[in-house]
Length: 332
Image (cartoon, rainbow, N blue to C red; front, side, top):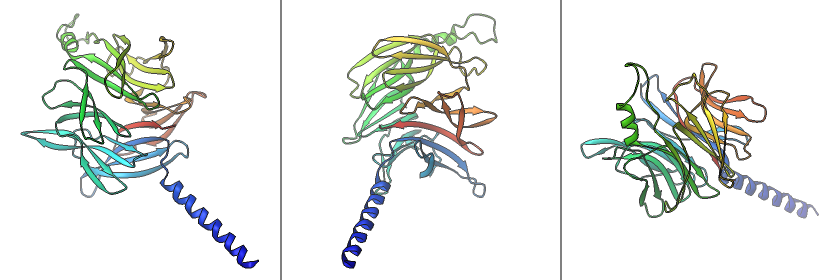
């Protein structure tokens, strides 16, 4: 009887250990990837960290640290593959450019993914596809690109007149949502401003929101406006776009567009709370929260906007250093 009891206890302990290991190795499904930069007081060197905030448990964990070398360091953590994507400045002939690297945290291996980019504005991975917005060397526009992780091939969407302003990924439908504008129109509007000299009479170029499949073979135009569509977000069948009439004018509230992809209708409302940072915002999986970088009560940080209660809660406050970018990830 005693042996049988000890045997049962041993089985239970083994099960607990196995479940603990499985739990530790299982990827989180709803999280925020946060990239921050901080100067070391003693050495004067700036290092950049990638931190993961688990939306469910409300806990944070540092997953990677790399040297500050890019013009604007960006990072993204893919919890499923346990890989970190980040930018590093490299030599491109006689020039310098920010390019994309990946670090596999399981095997501690680093690999360079691009070699001809001058600048990078976004990096978002979804398994075998790594989407980015960057300016290739020799180009004058920010282009939407995708890296095939299996073949290392790179494909681009758009032409040499199309600038990509903002991007969001629909992991369920395997779609990319982008806000774009014509570089030719922007330049023309800059040089043909009407009104008194010294005043801002710039006419915003038309911004267009597109839905593109992962292969870049099929593109659907959703809507367009003569507004700065600076942030796009996705929840279920709805595309949300934050729009402004002028660049970086915090005195005027943003306009929120809600486009339903099934009904193909738009609802317009005023974003009547704190201003969200350009591009860095995303919905929770249940659609009841928006997570974004914002400036509230003289404190810049990552905040949780509760859409049910109207309350805003701090997730990470920027007491020193700088929060470079975030990405809200919902795998489920």
